[in-house]
Image (cartoon, rainbow, N blue to C red; front, side, top):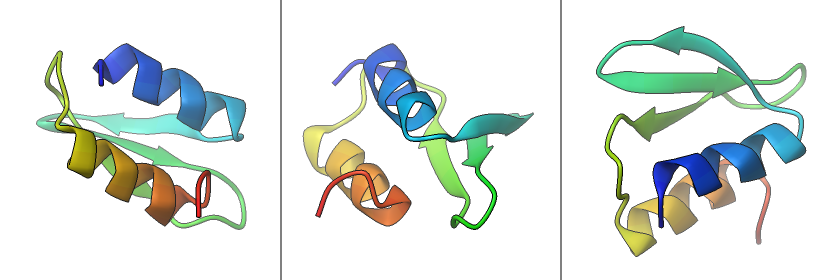
Length: 58
């Protein structure tokens, strides 16, 4: 999955970029912060784990 697609899905769920470094940290009020690796392409399993931690998918 492309990083920009993952970020779009997080932003659609109400997450906003909080901090940028080696990883991008996204958070939303009442939600658990999630880390997104700063790579163009993100492994399918990693992307699913990030979306699951964010509560976007079950």
